[in-house]
Image (cartoon, rainbow, N blue to C red; front, top):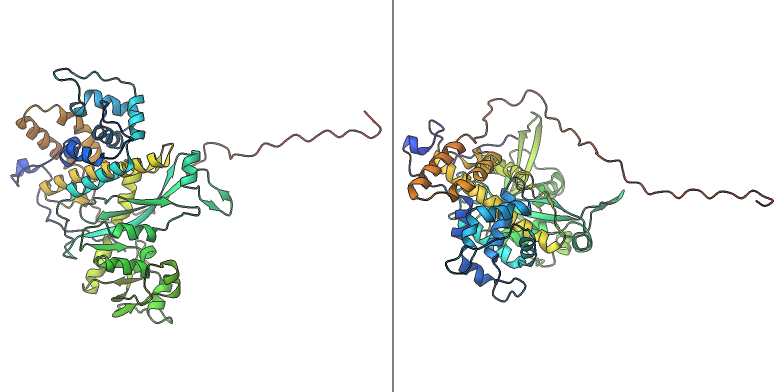
Length: 479
């Protein structure tokens, strides 16, 4: 099924900046400026009350440390040394305190920053990530077909560098061939459909006795989302517990169903016919109640069962089944679900561009801090894309995240060198002009050749256990 494009604002004329066309004022903000506006020193000081693990007596305050961790996700290399060099020469130097009237002398050694990262409380990093999300989101973007904001739910797996502590907190997954080497954490994300901003993630172990499911993490996520927004999910979320908790949190839902579950909701016999749209009351099964003890036995969710017959990307016909509590016409329901593919590209941006596919840390606590602040870095780029899209009067989803992050990275030091408001305005105009070239191509026809995925070659031979040499047999009759 081809994804239908959002229509937030009509695309007008040329692709150049609004300073040339005269459409509204230009309003672009650098990542560091946005961070400073959203996260104040007094706010961080309030978060640190009762936290004895982090000392505020040193030059590296918690506010500076969190910005440097975010900068590492925005930087091309993302090393500790790159963050320290940015502190020495970039705008973050203004946040470093020192004696009155004296320029603070900072060391280029990374040890102090490394220790400060480890001492930073996880709770403070989580609160800052939530604070950034709320400040960047502002008013939730309305999905035209839905007349309300909507969030996409999906889960993914993130690997963690091996250590004894990480393997204990996030046991490596197992299959019939044995256990993997890398500890793995399951992460659930929720991205706004229009803007692409990500709510602070939920996570837990992928395997082991304390393993969590995507549905279990989604229960916590639903309580964090803005009131009244809709939630969309694929077949993994098309279960009674998700529909029940979404309804309890006042979130209209649209979940795709497996054919087996659609048959059961249709009466247990045959699958719903195409163009089915009937009201129903979904009640939990014994398995639902056993897996979710918090759900009362008399619980029920009133909604609709829908079925469609559509063509997939290869032109083949397939049937789609949905359960929803929305009251939209069937064609709009199908159009709304067509936006679900955006979560796949958003996860790719998180893993590839923000480099969250592998967390190179030594402790579970540090892995969690890297995750939440990595999502905060992703949101800073998304906020700039939304500003540029508003000025250019295009859909934010039409901009390439990779090119937008490259532009933000290039203009990060330039914003810091601006000495006047006029100079800042000129920088914003040039940044908007560069972002206008970050639009994704609009192909009229699909590629004429099939897309292939080549497997990655193994650079090293498979690890094998060393065999002990066989003992020499002593001949009979002595030596």
